[in-house]
Amino acid sequence: MPVPPPPFIPARPRVRRKRRSSAVPAPPPPAGLSVLSAAVVEFDADILRVEVVFDTTAAQPLAGVGGAAAVKWAARYQGLAFVGIAVTLENFDTLQLTLSLTEPEAGGDVISYANAPSDIADALGRQLAAFSGFPLA
Image (cartoon, rainbow, N blue to C red):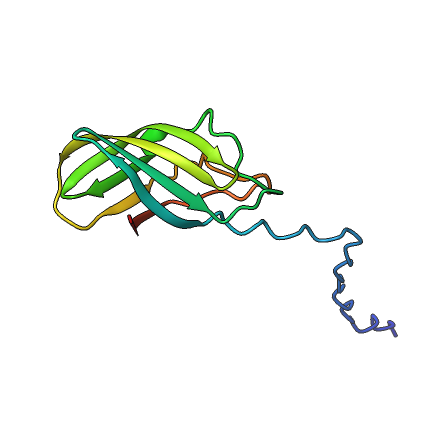
């Protein structure tokens, strides 16, 4: 009499466990740079000068703006639209923008920044995010 084959018993599925990483997780990126105020300091028929104050300190000042594209800045003041032509670092927390008249535009007095990518940052590496409609004083 032939011997019957042993019954088939499937092997247990292998369970792989995740290894714990011994690396320290990277710190979160710093919060973005913020505008605290924007005030018109000079308005001539074709030119508008605005001082923009940021949330920086003397210990962690704004980074140089030598390569900043002034055309990323725009403003509307007294029913006229302006586009940036120069950006100057005035202080550890202040930029002076010079903007040139483009055309009439109805609406309130506001300033905007188009970020693509941002070229305004501070010593901590925080960058200014795009914004629009920030009130001008």
